[in-house]
Image (cartoon, rainbow, N blue to C red; front, top):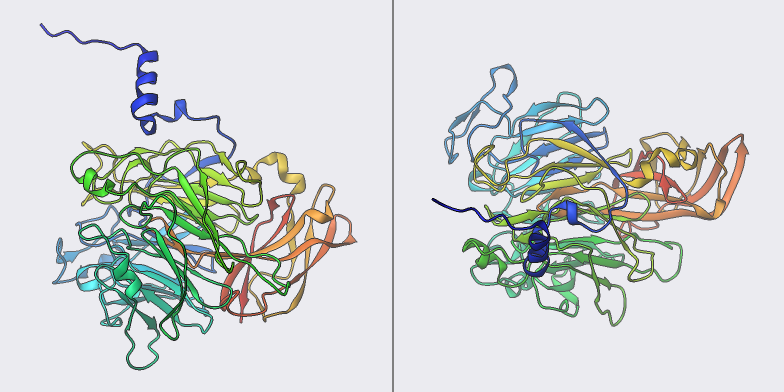
Amino acid sequence: MSITRVWPLEFLIFFHLLFAPWLLPPLFAAAAGGGQWQLLQRSIGVSAMHMQLLHNDVVVIFDRTDFGKSNLSLPDGKCRNDPHDTALKIDCTAHSVEYDVASNSFRPLMVQTDVWCSSGSVMPDGRLIQTGGFNDGERRIRIFNPCNGCDWQEVENGLLARRWYATNHILPNGLQIVIGGRKQFNYEFYPKTGAPNLYNLPFLAQTNDANIENNLYPFVHLNIDGNLFIFANNRAILFDYAHGKVVKTYPAMPGGDPRNYPSTGSSVLLPLKNLQAPVKEAEVLVCGGAPRGSYIQATKGNFVGALTTCGRIKITDPAPQWVMETMPKPRVMGDMTLLPNGDVLIINGAAAGTAGWENGRAPVFNPVLYRPDNPTGNRFELQNPSSMPRMYHSTAILLRDGRVLVGGSNPHITYAFTGVLFATELSLEAFSPPYLDAEYDNLRPTIVSPASQTRLGYGTKLLVRFSVDGAVSASRVTVTMVAPSFTTHSFSMNQRLLGIGGGGGVTAVGRSTYEVEAVTPGTRALAPAGYYLLFVVHQDVPSQGIWIQMQ
């Protein structure tokens, strides 16, 4: 006869607090703030490993092709015929979808070759350029044009090197740079510019941990001087990609722990402000990751608690130094999304383990708001939790209405829905930050003009007309513009927010209607040409965005 011991709840709580605090369920989390969750689609048939919002308010989503059938059929009897595919040579299911935000509907798209762990960026004309992947997709370029009924087009051997776990960024000259990838310590451009077309980047070799890497999907941000801030592992450089020169080497992040795949943290370029000032500043924030050695431990079944720290650095300083901060919860594989009011949403991920198949444990259900302008020690605020684990291969992106679209999570080599710790997730959710609560409706601006899809030049004065139902605090009206990101593997490529107006100078022009002056960025180094979302923010409450095209 066996005896089952039932431990008192108080003992279990004490045990977890003492030995494994990251394993505590949301019930025991610190008091949460606000925010609301909404289930948009129970299943779109595809797990959202990669996402990009386009200027027609559709989101292109794709997963990978090398695991077998998805849960969504291709239309009209279409089938993908790929003799090189490692799972199915003939596959009549979709591995990409177009999600229409306004109608909350989706349609299947067809990718011909494997897009697993790839990268991308939107070109100035609005086309999504996706690069690389796995197997026969590793040197492909895929083009998605945002038009009615359009589908993916593929260019064979469009890349000179295999790009798997690479990072892309749009540049001031309108080209797209593709950096790194597994065993690729180099970079190239799209479209091609002439010989040699493939350029060495020794920094990627220097930050590569043998047999682990910890420098894949490097964090890349365009600095205000046109050079690239590149962070890999726990180190960073400022890089002149045009001449192949390191302009500045930054101090290593304190603690020495890795922040890139598979010890996956995340990073954002904090909002760029005071763009008319003679001296401009830029700051980068890097949050989460896994302690050194965690990946090897996870492959052995030992799941080490994730990092609790963020590092913040002013990359334009002559002698920059990291300032370390502590998040309310440990987090690995989290996403960081810039919100229209300049706050940063940290969402998704796990409290233990690393990225990689079956390597994560203890989902972190609570998002966190980071308020960059608050005093140190008062910047983080826990938000209400989701009920769905969003682990490895989950994503989050900003939508035009201010919500954050959340999808994905598949820590398995195939789709697995039963008999696993964390089922493959095919759903889409929306997280509404507290600024969307009904109690702020009387503060919420509505943009009257300019019209959406307006084309704007650089250094141009712009009168933005808006309405507000309640009383307006003129000193707390700002105008921001956000570059939508290509998001995968906890990094939002090309994400960028610029403050271009407000802080006073608001004029009443009618009943509950006002104008505020903005000035568009003066250079393409501040804002590369292309589509942005423009918002009016009043007392931290944003309007719905409108699309503008910088050209």
